[in-house]
Every structure is written in structure tokens, then in C-alpha cells.
Length: 516
Image (cartoon, rainbow, N blue to C red; front, side, top):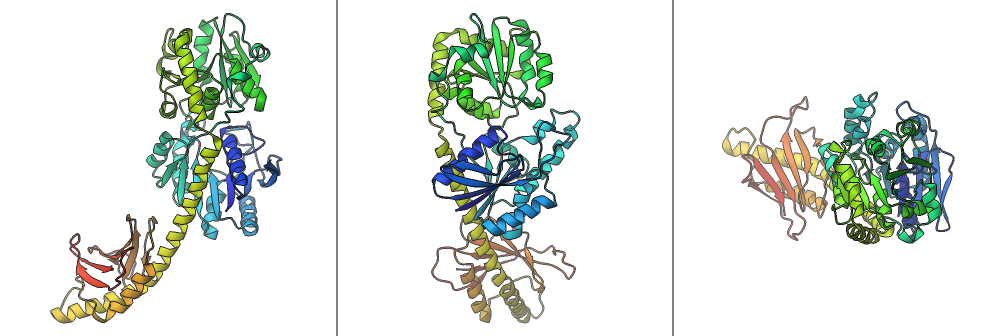
């Protein structure tokens, strides 16, 4: 299988989306698939894995007023030129558009232009993020609309948690599957703890060392920890990462036992995880924090703000500890009570062991295999929709002729009729039989706005569990649908007898046409 990934972020950037994509590509290559990537041009030309070099096709990146810490690529002419060239040369079997808002829009565009199956994945609740930036909060509804628009035509939409799936569906997106997360349990493990790293992170005897790892941005809600750090001299906080609000956070936490350690990766980061006493995760807007699994794998108790995604990963008191952000700033509030639970050695041991066990069930190969299955699902749905569309092309013309003849016969029988009741097809049976045979086993989930006939009918595909259904509605010469009850053509998927017949529908006051 040839997979083209179009993404808003990739190496050398460091974030959860990049981590997931790298592990996905590792798996695809190890399974013998071919992969190419379209991403912002940040200097990387290839991603090397398993002895293979995965091409990265860069699109010129620019800094934006919204998020000036790193450059982004826009879906402009150059992006489409790159996508055109890559698609024509690579000829992918499926396109994966990763968070299609900016650059990844061209993945959606290319899939539609070239008739390629599309999988679109949702990793970040951008409307919620925008609301954390007062100057840009007005854009949240627009981004929500764009999200629905970009995911609308994907054969498969992919969410990283059940909560993210609900968010997508609330925006009108359908056909949404959830993929599990993964973690490298060999890299992240308790045995990597060392005193030198702990000292570097600001851990001293007599103080609990809390650790945060992630991008330093407004949506991470690190400011929620400041009141507690201001009050408690028995707690130290290590912040690993960088981002657009680092300077503001350093000023905010000045005078507290807080160390800003900057970027870490690989074994250095694994040592940092294992050397702390607990991991703290104050964000309530994350769709799924990969760092939670990394902390669990490292044997750290996770103290996380209560939200939909964190409640999917943590049962408080069993494999982690949850707190409520509503009173996190209050002395003795939910956050401080959660930290004080670290004084209970039996609870800490239980949480550590359960967290590590959770992590061991979330391997990257297992998580990536789900992506591959969803790619195959997208390809299958695309082919079925094409087959059904071909069937409609045959049905639409033959059906118009058939219905005209049937109505004429009925009118002749009644002397004068309005043509809405469908009589026995008579000599039209052969045409409907051919149409039904062409539809055959076709199954589709296409929404279908309908193919209008010049003969006065509109043929609209509908979703059914098996077979396919066509709704036929009158329209006038101006193309307006007339307010008549529709008739339906049902194309079954299991019968060997294909004799078509007309029969009044029990569900409609109009008529049904069925092939069987």
C-alpha cells in the first residue's frame, strides 16, 4: 500500500502529533508499505527508519501572528503544486490528511481531485485552543466550521480518544473511528532514574519533585500550578519543554521552586521522567496527552486535571490521581489534596504498578496497526462508493425511461391520472433488471446529494446496512424538487433471482421499485 501523509507538523518539530506520525511511519515501513510525506519546509528532506528513507516534500513555511513560535505552511498555490507533483509521481493508494486546517487542506483537495481514498485525523481541539488567546478567540467558530468541512468527504475520520470523537461528531462529522495511543516501554521505564538528573531538575532532599513535559503554550494551563508553588516550599516543579509563553511563565513562577529545563528528547527525556516523584498534567483541552502514557511507563504517579480524555486514561486512586481545575488555586483545594496523596506510600505503589501495566498494553505497533486497518477501510469504502456510483449512472437513465413508460401505462388504464402511482413495469422489466444487476453487491455510505435526470427525476443514494437504496423524486424544469412522495429503488445484495417488479411501498404513499 502506498500512503501519502499530508501534515501540519513534522520533524524537526517535537510534539505529540510528530511522535505519533514517526511511530506510524516506522510501522508502515516495517510492514512493507511505501510512505511519502508533505509537510512544512523546516529543513528536513527525509525521515530515516528501518534502513529506508521516507521522502519529505516541503512547502514554504511562514510565521503567523497567532502562533509566532514556529512557522506554518498555508494551503496556497505552491502547496497545491507540490501536492499535484507528488500525487502524479507517487500515485498513492490512500491520502492521510493530519488535522486538515492549513497545509493538510491540500491533502483533502488532492484526494478529491484525483479520486483517491481519504483518511482525515483529528489530534487537536483547535477551537478550544483559540479561546485561550483573547486576540484570536473570535476565530473559534470559523475553525469549527472548517473542521467539519475538511472532514466531511473523508471515507474514514480518525480521532485519538472517545472524547475527541464526540467533539468531531458534535461539529457534524460522521464516520469517526478511534485509534489507541502508544508508548515505547523500553525507552520509558522506572530503571532510568538517576540522582544527577534529579538534581538538574531542581529536586532536593525534603521536596517532592513534580514534572511537566510539553509545549509551553497557553492551552497547557501551567499557570494553574503557580498559586500552589507560591504557597508550598516543600514542592519543586520541573518544566521540560519550550514554547511561545516560556518567557511569561518564567516571570510568573519567579521566586518559586520551579526549574525550566528546556527541550529534552530520547534517553535524556526518559531519565527526566523516571527521576521525578510525580507527573502533573493541568490541561483540560488536550485530545489525548501522550505524555501521560510516557509518565505511566516511567513509573510515575500522574496527577491530571479532570477532563474527558484524562478520565479515559485515569481512574483516580487506581492508576493515577485526578483533580478539579475549578478550585486548583484555593489553599487546600483539589490540586493540593491530590499532591498530598503522594504521602501515602501504599497508594503510590499501587498507582505506579497499575500505570506501568497500562503502558505495557499500549505498544506503538499495536496502535499503528489500527491506522493501517483504517486506511484499508477507507480504500474499501471508496471502491464500494465508486461501484455504487457506476450503478447509479446506469440506473438513472434506464429508470427514467422505465418510469415514463410505467406512468403512461397507468394513465392510459385510469383514463387520466396524475402519474404518481407506478404500475406494473411490463416491457420495462428488462431495463430495471439490467440496472439492478449493475448495482449488484454494491454497498455504500455515500451521503449522495442526488443525480438529476433531464427526464424529471432525481436519484439519491442512501445509506443502508446492506444493499443500496435509491430515492427517486420529481423535479420541475427549473430543477426544483416537487413536493411529491418519493419512490425508492432497492438493490439487494444476496438474492440470485433478479426479476424486477413494481409494488406499492408500505412506508410511502407513493410507490417503490425494487430489484431482487
